[in-house]
Amino acid sequence: MKDFFKLKENKTTIQTEILAGLTTFFTMAYVIFVNPSILSLNVGMPWAGIFTATILASVSGMLLMALYANVPFAIAPGMGANGFFTFVLCKQMGFSWHEALAIVIICGLCIVFITVTQLRKIIVYAIPEFLKDSISSGIGLFIAYIGFKNASFLKFLSDAGSYSVLENGDIISNSSVIPSLAIFGNSHALLGLIGLIVMVVLVIKKVKGAIFIGIVATIFAGVPLGIVDISKIKIFDFQPISAIKDVAFSAFSSDGIGSLFSNFNKVFITITAILALLLSVTFDAIGTFIGTGRMSGIFDTDSEKKLSQKKGINSKFEKALFSNGLVSVIGGLCGTSSFATYAESAVGISAGGMTGLTALVIAVMFLLCLPFASLFSIVPLEATSPALIVVGVIMMTSIVRINWTDYEEAVPAFLTISFMTFAFNISYGIAAGFIFYCIIKLAHGKVKEIHPILAGTSVLFLVNFIIIAFRG
Image (cartoon, rainbow, N blue to C red):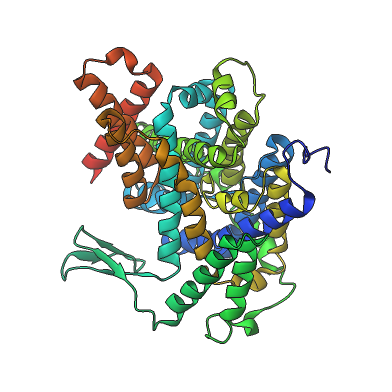
């Protein structure tokens, strides 16, 4: 095991990797329950089938990350991607969930093609250094915001009459929404605060396994507060496993890919949907790899430069990108929405995870959720969210490398970080940075400094936004 994962070469140990895997798992395990809920409540997919599909497809993705790419990244259905699946593909564009799964598979195949043909590597090489640092900092702020929100530290006030309620009970509001600090008399906010204090103290004291210990301690603190209910634990529940047959390979039914291209009028909207999903998934992955990889040294500057100099799929960066595309295909086949490399991986990386052994541990933990789902479901978001805030602090270190006195760097960098957080979308932040970088270079007459790939990608982002605007 030490030789296979090259632990000595990566300056890590089996114990460290296991601890990192457990830490990452508890931080992002919510996807196992949230993803089925989003897809079942909004588009009528069977909950049990999606639950099993989410786990099995995630395990396959993390095995690719572990055994093929040898990187410590967690991969699972993306929270933004399942929102796109339900509210854009199914609700707004009118696709059935069978057709939406077919789009997910096609998008995954496109990502694999882009990776194999080196285009994705050239995209990474085309991104200016200061934008890469912006992406890293932006992801730090992005996951810290997730931490603040999920720890119940925030509440949101919206003006009367400024919002509408969807069929599933979700609320859409305009920009009148104002975030403010929650009242800490609330037991959920109090538990989150306890977790943050414990975790910060342990990290400052440089206690080994500080984040994992903090998560476990917060779970126990949640019992007397009435947030963690151990009576809900039910062991060896295998019932959901057989339900995967209700969603697996649904993309190939008569209601799926056969229906997708049966109508000529549907072809344009299908291509539009594939393009939008492709941009989102591709740049979510690239952003996460650059951000967390640079923070830890897993992907350094030299490895990024080699991307345009080597043929085939050789480096860990390339293998990770390829794995990310392939698992989206697997996810669509199993019956769930597009996959994303989780920004929460930074939590495990900050705990010392440097190799695929971390991803392997996460995969094992996901598998254990099949018969022990109720055991892991008692872990509240307030117990894991402080970890995201702490890691957000760590990831913000790259912000000092940006030249804030030069507006050619400062404006695209600031917009990358801001949009990524405020729009709650990694790819939107990257889009804002790319587009304004090109605008500023054009304004200064420095057209030759714009990499053709960066210019082309910016145009695609613009086209995507224009189409979304016209579709309302």
